[in-house]
Length: 412
Image (tube, rainbow, N blue to C red):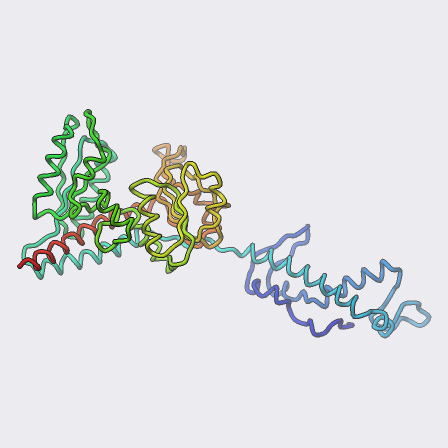
């Protein structure tokens, strides 16, 4: 066979990303398999195909070997004389372009599914670490136990479920957790009195007020939240702790549990936050706003999106790290997500599902099935951020107890 441009022998560099792949490709009805067979499509072979087309178009028959006796075709020598270097270069450029298109398609077909970042597994690691910390405190200070109080107003089923989860986690770690339930008839004054009583109890290191407040009376939630002592505000929702977080005083405040859990999940991916472009969807005081502050003080460039953001898909597409807490089922579509991004889904929504006994199923704010085709890492719902929120509440409670002990020793 006549060898054109022998320096092009071997598979094109454009195909290097396809080596070892077994994905099928189907372009324009031509079915190829991206394996060793695909690598055999060398630039010289493609070049000869184009050359043949040129000669047929010009009406110049040729042979790669000398023509039969009496034939009119051109010999290899004549062909080499006819071909100018410019024509050869053009043909090879076309061949290279064709190979690059095929390689790009091959690489697209090899796109991997996102790595799932399990909140269940990560929260278990956190709880095990905290359990050791509590045991250490008990051994150093005989009879000492971190203490947590959960204050509830009313009797909402969802609140009861959340509280039981927190009490169970506390018992597992070794935290002494107590549940105080006030009736639905409780007034704002009565709730404030209960909070003040816990604030003054030195044996209690953490106090959370379960929201929403299920009372028949009007109660100012902001007033109640800020009544909790900043030193016992293990939910991190008081204006004092929120202000410290916004100023970057991360070591002198309690960080809200859900954003803190999100940061722990991001750390589990091994992706450094510093220098990354992070996008937070949602600006609530519990998730969105503190998440922005946490990412900012961990040296990310942060964009916060909300209901008035006009170009949400465009903003999402720029995110190396995406945290979603919008409260809208499957709002963020997979095609919006930047390839390789870290996606943290804080949403908990119920949508109809006839295949479930309950007639519904839990989904996040991100359309998981499409997003996990583009993201590098993604949290599931359920089993992602939810377990981490409880784990971080326990961590804040243990930290509060440690600070109490340090303060007690400094006054001795």
